[in-house]
Structures are given as structure tokens and as C-alpha cells.
Image 1: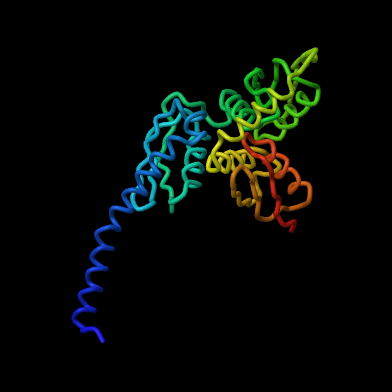
Image 2: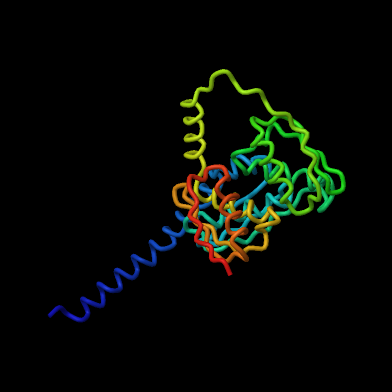
Length: 261
């Protein structure tokens, strides 16, 4: 039997080693969280012009700085919350001076444009948006009649929109389409978007749409596969949640486990 003093000394040594290394490990995790946030697709694409500072301490992340619009504050918070090692997010971001006033035409235009940017099967960059007291006029070019109709459907389902006047023209079909190039572009886009960004984009999309904004939906993403949990008021709202999530950039598949109650 080993001497009790020896065992005590061994335990003390192990404990002291743990106490010394624990702060170092926590510091490394915090550094990793702060760096990961800046490298997410959301931060590099949608929030690149905002002034956001990410500070983590033992997994408790504080966001400070300014954003151009209210949705960017929520988007930043949701993205960081989905990063490994993050326990809680204290979102102290504020809108910068000159941001659109809530419910104004400028605010609604921003909301429409932002929502279209989240979706994969509409031409957000080629769509001009005009707002007049809840009436949205869309101009530009759609790749097909189906895309034009889908744009109308998405915009009409946004809170604050009362009517959609879609004046978009439909592009003439190309003589020859390089399907391999299109497939390659789609695959590359999917690989470039991290899971934390996809989760945040899906959450924001469901929140923006009138048909799904009231649903308490839990969203998880694993290598581009999105799983939806929670309760839906009816089968139609459940199906819409799956449809909206499936058309978010980077989503490869949706597993809709929502329960109809």
C-alpha cells in the first residue's frame, strides 16, 4: 500500500495542474470563438459593413458596436449563438444613426431585400424593390415564371406587406445551359456556408415570414442538413417552415420534425 502522504501529494499535483491549465484552455476557447465568428459566412457576407466587436469570456459572448439595421443585430446574435463553445450571448449591438425607422417604407424595402438575399431560388440582386405604405412593387428580371411567382409569394408573406405588384420580366431561356457549371456553383456555395450561419439564416427567415413568425421552432444544422423541431399550429404552417428553410442559402436538406398541435 502506498503511503497516504504520497497519495495526497499526487492528488494535489494533479489538481494544481488542472487549475493551471483550465484558464489556459478557457482562454484558447474564447480566442477560437472570437476568431470563428469573424470567419462565418454571415459576418463576411451580410455583416461585413457593420462595426461589430465579439468578446468571449468562458463562453459568455458579448457583442458590442453598431449595425446598419435591426435585423443585423438579431442575425449576428443568432450566428454567434450557434458557434461551438458558446454558452450565452449578450447582444448589446445598436443601430447606427440614420437607420430606417421601423414600419417606414425604407424599413420595409430593407426587410424585403434582406429576406430575398437569404433565399436561394430567387434573384435578389436583380430585383428592384419599391415600397409605398405597405404596397411593394418589384422590378427587374427573373430567370423563369416560377421564380417570378416565388418572389411574389415570399414578399407577400412578410409582415408589413399588404400588396405585391410584381412587374418583373422573365428572361428568355438560354440556347444552351452548362449544367455542370451550375451544379459546381451550387455545390461550392453550399460548402462555403458554415452551419452556424445556416442556422441563423433559417431562424431569421422563419421569423421574417408572416406564416411562420409565431412558431416556436428550434433549428439545428449539421453539415448543411437542417433539422426543425417544435410545434406548428397546423400542417400548412409546418410545410411552409420546411419550404422556407429548404430554400435558404447553404441548406442541403431539411428534416422537419415539427409536431402539429
